[in-house]
Amino acid sequence: MSSFEDGIWAYLVDQHHADHVEFRVPPPPKRTVRPVAATASAVVLAAAVAVVLLVLSASSSPPPAYALTRVAGGSYTVSLYNVSRGVPALNAKFAQLGIRVTVVPIVAGCTASSFDPVQASPGAIRSMTETVTASNRGIRPGYRGYLAAERLPNGRIGLALGATPRPIPSCFPTTTSHGIPGPRQP
Image (cartoon, rainbow, N blue to C red; front, side, top):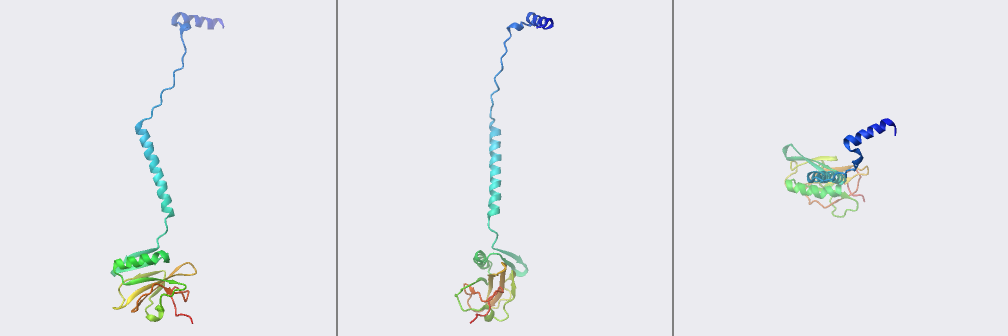
């Protein structure tokens, strides 16, 4: 050591007993988990998992089979998006609402009846679109309304609304690809 360092050391030993000081490193402080913080973390984690599950279930749920919107005078606008799921659901909804209209699918190979809706009630076909307005208005006493529904080759749904005094079959045969059944081909 230099004379300066020796002088400082001598001063520290005389004045502060530096030659008897022990250096110890204190142990790290104990880590304590606070119950409130642990509970809050668990709640936040559970909420995040719930949000993820909700988003996943919403994105994987099937689209609606139909849309039914009430319009003036007890009429309903009907849009059909899925024939296989929408027909039974719409028939149940119409029955619940007291609407005398039956939705009937148009399917290849249907042998339920020889009923031909076009010939059964000439002039009764009022619509041939994806969306129709259904109600009891315009259905004569003793008649029952029907809504023929078919998935067209272009992927759209064709709907034909009509009325007949005859019993409504469970299906109509596919004889044309215009969204409504036509006369049977020989």
